[in-house]
Image (cartoon, rainbow, N blue to C red; front, side, top):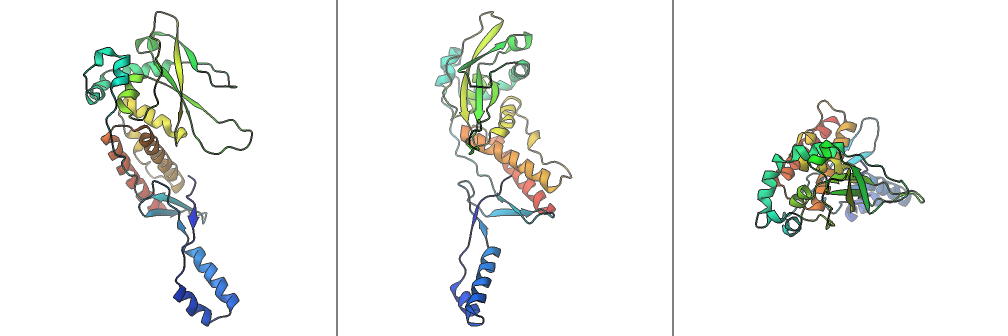
Length: 278
C-alpha cells in the first residue's frame, strides 16, 4: 500500500540557536537538516484525523503510514422511491424491513450472479450488455451491470481499467444511500437473453469492490479477519483491503452499522499485528 505523503516539522528556534553557537554555520545547517529529516511526520489525508501508525519492514527503511482509526460515516436511510418505482408492491414498506428480509432471497441471487457470462469488446464501454439466460440466471436475473473504475492518474496513453459487476437493484438500492440513479431495467419476457443497462461507477478503491459486492449478498464478515501467522507484507495487503472496503462503503453510503463495527475491529487487530511484526 502506498505510503502517505509527508512534510517537515519546524524545529524549535531556541534549540537551533544553541546549536549554532557551538559550531560553525555550515555544521549548524547540516545538523538542522539531519534533525528535520528524522522528525518527518505523515501528511494526513482527508480521513486521517487521528494520530497515525507507522510500520517498518526489516528489509527496508521505508515506512507504511496508516490512520489509527477508520471513522464511521453519519448514516442516513435510503430513499425508497426508486425501489417502489421498480417494485410497486414495496410501497409503504420500510427500507430497513426490506434489508432484513433480503437474506431469504440472496442465495438464489448469488447463484444467478455466478452463472452470468458476458463478452465485451475491449475498445469501448457499451451502454448495455446482453447476458445468456440459463436456469440459474432465470431464477433471479440481475437487473444492471456496474462498470467500476477509479480516478488514479494513469501513464499517458494507458486505458483506464474497468471491472464489471452484475447486480440486483433491490440489493443495492436497499443498502446504498449514494448509489447513482439506476436506469429502468427490462424485465425478462421469455427471451434466451437479457439486456442489462451498464452503470458507470467511480469508486476510491475499485480493486476491492468485490469485497463490498460480496458482503451485500452474503452478510459474511469472514473476509475481514486478519490472516493468521502472516508477515508484514501480507498484513499490509490485508489492511489495504479493509481500508478499501471501508472507503467504498462510505462513498456509496452503505447503511449497515454491523459492517462499520466489524471494519473498526478488524482494522485495530490488523494494525496491532503489523506493529508486532515491525
